[in-house]
Image (cartoon, rainbow, N blue to C red):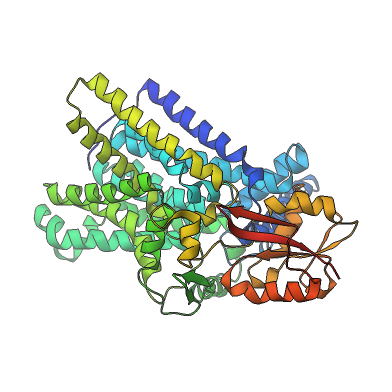
Length: 553
């Protein structure tokens, strides 16, 4: 992989316009999606963080500077949801502190989702620069638009969660690493280390990055770099280690702990607890071609097939083309640096999928835990298609640009309809290769995740429910998180007087989420409520996802 373009004045306009468009596209549709299970926890954590910022101001006003970072004060605000790093929750809380508590222009939930929209814009910028520097300007403009018109990506970009931010950090870290080995500049190595600290403080996924990159470098050192340098031995080995790895130890780790104040106290015990939580992570049941994946070992094919059937055809073609490009670059490169750069891109693209494919690794739900590498192979794939089209179209460069651009515009237009259709439930999207929503249902695939999909039901609920009615939210069966329900009320989706309950016999109304494992709940609702007819359902192409029932007896 080599640099192909420099940043010009027009790129300020193109990159900025792309980022702003993505930000607006995400933020202005934030109220079209209900709050998923994880958001309930993270928005509650954001409340704690906003309280912390309030307390900082109070302590400063009182002149009690020592109290701000005391153990009691830190534990008071950081102990909740301590199994996850704090960076995104700190940002969610800061956004709430500014836009909700001080300015009063956003609800607390939407202030958190504002941060998510900002990270979507940052991801668009990252893809633009990656496409520009290593491929072409047309690729730089097209790739972020194709990326955010994948229904699953569009859906997850709205959520006040860690999944799109860690996607940004994961892909950008691999891009920065390639810049490190290409430029050899100390400043780039330091920037990568600083960037990686924030990545670690976002989610634990990136802890694999230095391991796989160092093992990769070690391979190239053993078989190429050592011979090319003409020296080896113990001293030569340590001198040859790229500076970025040293900086990750002396810069990334201290900065990581600085961002996470809770780890300043009882550090070893808390790190062990953190590692144990993720080492024994709960598995969320999935139905995969009719087979309930509840306990391991899980099928190696799962993330590969899910990627194949949940990615729209244009982007799927780009994925294959992108991996082809990186593999071709690896074998065609005449120097070891070029080969290592190409191998880093292959690793960054596919390692997340290989990791989840490992039979003993729990399946967490959906595709969000392995889409971190999508930007890399998508961007390269767009360039392969652009290159191939230029070879077919024998005309002037100007006309080639117009025709290629028109081709990508048509591809983007074709993606508008599925995104509109699944705007409220992007996690339920399946592509035409499995027959869409109906084909996936007939294949007995997992229909949806995390009990968020009630936006289509709330208007009926708000209209029909009497004052102080009780709503069964099915939270014990991967239904609607009680925290998420409360935040839906704070965002204005559900009336404030309606009470959530997880006890069916005391409920006046009930939510039901159509999953195979929930069949017994539907039977219980029919017996308890005296009806099998829902007041309202959410559906796409006649496939039901959730329903609202009213007690008839």
